[in-house]
Amino acid sequence: MRKLSYNLWFGKFEEKVELAEKLKESFKSARNNSPLPFNISDLGMEIFGKDYYKILRKIAIEVAEEKMEKELRSDEKYVIALVKALEELEEIINVLKEKKSDLELVKGTEIQDDFAESISNLERLKEKVEKEIEVVMERIAPNLTEVAGAKIGAKLIEKFGSLEKLAKAPASKIQIIGAERSLYKALARLKKGKEAKMPKHGIIFLHGFVRNLPKNKRGKMARFLAGKISIASKVDFFRGELEEGLHDLVKKRFEELRRK
Amino acid sequence: MRNVKFFGNIPATKSRYGSHYGEKIFEVGRERYREWVPWRSKLSAMIVKGYEVEFSGNEKILYLGAASGTTLSHLADIVDEGMIYAVEYSAKPFKKLLELARNRENIIPILADASKPQEYSGVVEKVDLIYQDLSQRNQVEILEINSKFFLKRRGRMLMMVKAKSIDSTVEPREVFSLVLKEVSEAFEILATGDLEPYHRDHIFVSGVRK
Image (cartoon, rainbow over all chains, first blue to last red; front, side, top):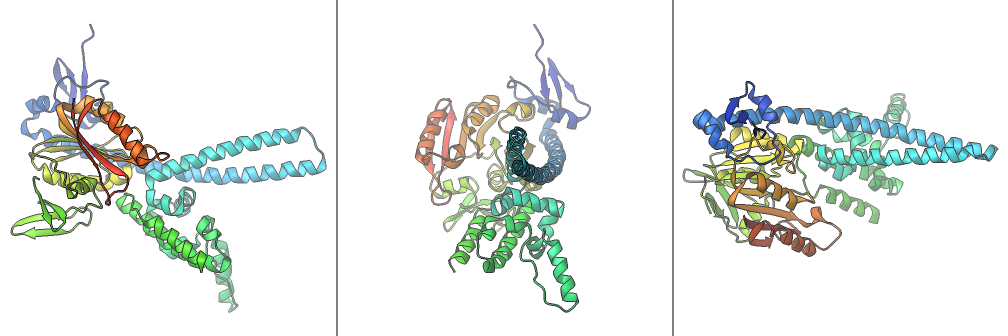
């Protein structure tokens, strides 16, 4: 019969304990497929005495810190890469659709079906990417996701470079980011002493609450939404817990503006 | 209840520590109490609604779904001579949880998926109580497998159930009765009740392992 062996955070157990050299490493691999038939703290106290919990806590904190930092960084990078991929995909799909209808105008052949098939494949891929963005955003920025939606939230993180930068940005910048070109154009006109229209919204124009209002109210909504997005991303970055009610505020404001 | 005192309608836990999430601190003579708002914590809501949870203070607890440690901080005040293994999967709230764990000698933080107790089976000891506050569809299953790994015979469990996270397409009442049926396979149910108006469509279930 094979001897039973157990992986413990401080070493291996096989009839007797073999202490690990690096506790952090053994902590990370303290995996077992079935429950331990003994109480690990009893065994540990025999070895470490009353310092058992002190040592365990220290190692647990170190391991968790390391893992957390790694996960946070990789999740943000992942969502940024996904958003970039999504934007390209949207572009490609549009181009293909355009070419397909160009072809149709000239001559109806079978090749259009191939185009249609490719387009629908790409659209399925696009949906997958969008779903994945939602899942990751829910994890790294639940409040931002609730207020702005996963896609817009992810685009904002991508534009600013990280959730930290977004959390520390002024709301006015959040309001117009993505509309830099019209902003600079307006600024250039102002410099020359001419009249100019300042952009009211950039990326956040994509938000249904902004887009679905009449033109003269979009600015108000965009400003309000940007303010709430700023708060949401701050809560996400500094606290990390879902703050209920933020989204309701945004919705209420939208209803107000729509009725007026 | 151990280390819990009411200030008007709001409970507070006796604590040697400062504020963790912005809660108020009450001073009574030399003692210090941390306000425990029922809107922020389901366990507090349960206590406000008149349910008692007995603690002797030296319990070993496995806490599944500790989030950023709001409820955990009060539980750590209550079992001041015990030990709490706090499992949370999401890296985001873990930041705040780690702050707490660094200050409190009776919290061991574990960043892991609660549905895979295998991963931390060589860390967590046998416990007297499993406290579970997860918004996951298979939370009963997760409770059961963790009990198998860590809960002592006749050990207790206390779980918070959010109807929406189990099934948002049917009435909460139906979800709850299904959950109770599932739970009663491995546990003798001691008490259950809703948490209105503090947490809508939530119930708690407490039980003892069969």
